[in-house]
Length: 113
Image (cartoon, rainbow, N blue to C red; front, side):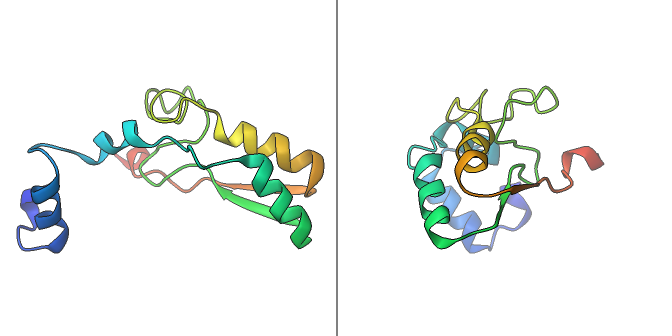
């Protein structure tokens, strides 16, 4: 909450640039992934000789980069880019680049509540 640390640089920035009550979740609608091109990433990694890839596919607050029934309305298919980014990633990488894809799914702070 912004009022918890009224002297912080971040709080002051938020107050100057966003409407009152703007939350972290409000950023999600602006996440478009417009510059994410899994095919291009696969080309780069194939030419680098990568043997495996690690993708952080779930943010600490529960937002997933795939359509998840456990992250209802808080995933890349429901809000933001409207894309299954993990599916695009996996499809391009597995067929051309690497034999291992590691999906890093950290413990969600939401799951601890």
